[in-house]
Image 1 (cartoon, rainbow, N blue to C red):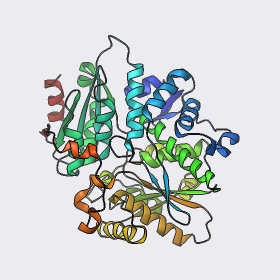
Image 2 (cartoon, helix red, strand yellow):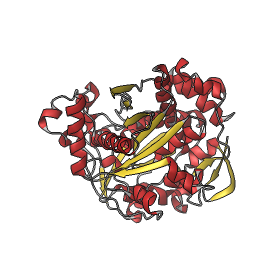
Image 3 (spheres, rainbow, N blue to C red):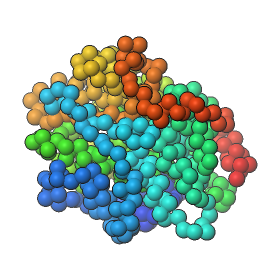
Length: 436
């Protein structure tokens, strides 16, 4: 597998180099030189395969000879060891539950795969790998658990102070060992900017072997394609072969992975980009003007991103036909009042509890269906996190229905360990250099 930078299509790096370097020095993002199209026989018979079998086939076609087949299979079967069911709520409306991994969020797919790939590529005696990750909520917890105890690695998580839920914060700050957490007095965009600047800072790159665990890393994006293929496989078992995906969207890695699956041949009819008040992409899809703006805090905090990093990858996939992009993605955005109303409506209609991000995806799917009453496609909205991670969001009558998993109860017995920093790069750089 060879990759290029979105800022320099003539560049070429190996998958291993892209995983460890995370972001090109020209500040683009890595993309595969070739996106293979899977054969129709495999696509049409997806229902005959398990999730790990699907994941292995997809990854092998993308990665080529970057990792030998037996080693890749071992990585996938170890990393993707939990299920991701589609649950029917009404006729042709399904929820894809992506919160059955250890951190109770969809990020477990990417974080667990990436940590094992990095561990596989690390050779004995090599310089310690320093993983920097900015999180708006769920990424940090998934990365922390994915890398916890992995030899010769150290993870530094940056998160916006006061802008993640209590449970998310416990997942970030109670690990110890090779995981450390920094509370940044700012927004997720500030955290993300610090991480990106670190990758292009000469002093830091001389001292450390830096990489990222954010979705800017291609090793995070690839495994997120797996659950799109698997969701379609489950629809095929029910005799359905047309699908629309509604995706809660913040940094746009999730929907970017879906588009990668579509490029590989998965017959998806439409993507719905469902955002909160941070509506940079829905606004672009309506106006044609891409205008990043400062993020604002919402109930769906993991989507509080004003300048989505992965949008450059999506734009790159459609660089030859931007009109096709606008035809393939429909954008909807909702404020907190509408999000709460959606949570209550889902509970009322289905006796089912959704997190605020998932509620937005459900509402977007319902609104899309109203605009397309003749569509025969099944609508699948992505449940990106377990509702227990957002206890303060729900009215009491809904909160009492949430089954809190044991791993969350255990977190509450641990002590928080974090360092508070401002949002200036010099302070972050000083911290890294002073804590080698």
